[in-house]
Image (tube, one colour):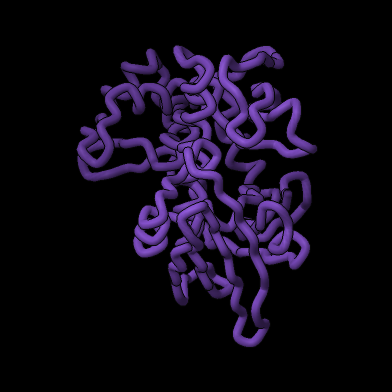
Length: 294
């Protein structure tokens, strides 16, 4: 994983600016101001709070002290508009992250599922550790079906199949968005990595890394490409309906780098009904889709 956190400089900025953004909230009064603004959050329809209303909501009587802390938040977490103050997108994003992950004592959860591995019929095991959900098979040779960061909040009221399907759906749609060149977390540009050993491996893999934040995944070539309408249509013609790990049809995937200039990567997805061949460039823009019926 490409991870610049902890360095003095990163691809999307410097460590000092990150430290400053966090340090701005290192006071109870500032936290109270942000939380008061978030209480009536309604996206673009959010009604601004006046200076006096916000001061009352925080429970402050010292206007000088209140104004000092409010000024510290302006621009990063609070925006002043014509009718008062509203929280910025940064404040909302941070609040949502806290709600999703709800910092608690670190725990590890693991257990067996009551359904067989779709590949070999072995035992499926799920594990949740360090905010990563992993679905693995005890019998498949060193192959994890799924590993992805997932908010603990999303595991509540879900069990077994519901849990890993929720994680899989989130991971799939994140990579589908990343295929368009947009990071699903910070909206920064995404770079694709085509290591020949990974592309020609089993299954064929592609690396996707955000140029700004720390988001990075290694996924099968099929995962992002299946969101292209003509690829999805070709797969359905052969009875292949993703997610492939649950497909009723046995699917085999092979990949190869066909050329460097211009760069072309090919993916063959084969079932008993035939083969779908997808050719894409180094931005995962599909160049051609062919269907061969057995």
